[in-house]
Image 1 (cartoon, rainbow, N blue to C red):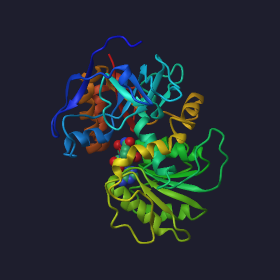
Image 2: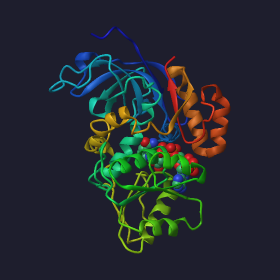
Image 3: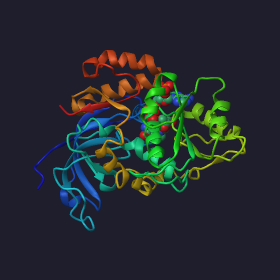
Length: 371
Ligand SMILES: NC(=O)c1ccc[n+]([C@@H]2O[C@H](COP(=O)([O-])OP(=O)(O)OC[C@H]3O[C@@H](n4cnc5c(N)ncnc54)[C@H](OP(=O)(O)O)[C@@H]3O)[C@@H](O)[C@H]2O)c1
């Protein structure tokens, strides 16, 4: 039985201004629909899209509640769930929602959450939700690369997958997923992150700022069979570069999928096989995430996380422990990193150094914890 609560949310009343913390409706247990669970949030992760959605007019009917990645405890389970939910009140879980996450209590779909391994603090798995789901969609979805799914005991298949931008949040997950599916992960990132991407399973890393990167990566892919390219970082510049690699392959047509879903890719060379849903279908996102949950919450991930074979990456950097009252500070920090890279990160570390581990370097995922 759920105790009496009030709920608060971090509301975005319109774009181009900070959010405001105030009351938000709290659903009653008998209002929870099939698959829905109510979670009391203990940690929120910040994604670049949070500041982008705060800054730009995305055509939402305002006010909206932003925020995607949460971890916390199950407070209530839908009584109408057919066959019952696999979760129980009190379970520690993490997962994601397409916005609506910056609240004290969030309704989540039980197909988009997983249990947190014993002893793991909320701040670790909370970094995974949106980015592992995005990676899984791009790698395994029927409209995307259609790769084999990850398994805890996958056998190497000898094929390669290029993860363009392997040190990003999406890339960090893509490298781990393709490796766990038996592919050789080839990636690009800054030279300083070569060890990081290799620690996640990449077998080769190339510097995307090297003027010859296209030819070097294409030559590497042409040593064998390449199952596909995923553009996991860099907005349009990442798309352009990754398309050039696909086009430069001398011996194969390499399918290409992109995390930049708004870019129309009109400049892509004709011999690049682009795989993505038809324009105008972006609102059907949840369907895509449900389609590939065997690679994430509903299959491979919980076991692999418990065994330590899947890493909660990038590492969490706790901005503050102020709960919802600390969300705006964290969004401002994310904006600094997104816009100013290493310099922005250095400034953020200066602000929150008491929360950083001694050797904290980029890449990181910003996290806010409940007090
Ligand atoms: N976050 C999500 O779940 C999500 C969801 C849907 C779509 N997306 C899209 O996925 C992409 C990545 O998002 P994210 O949140 O994963 O980003 P992120 O974690 O903020 O990644 C930033 C890192 O990307 C790398 N990068 C930047 N430009 C690059 C380029 N041209 N080539 C290769 N690497 C480059 C840099 O790595 P180095 O430090 O090594 O230089 C940078 O530190 C964006 O296009 C975003 O719109 C993300």
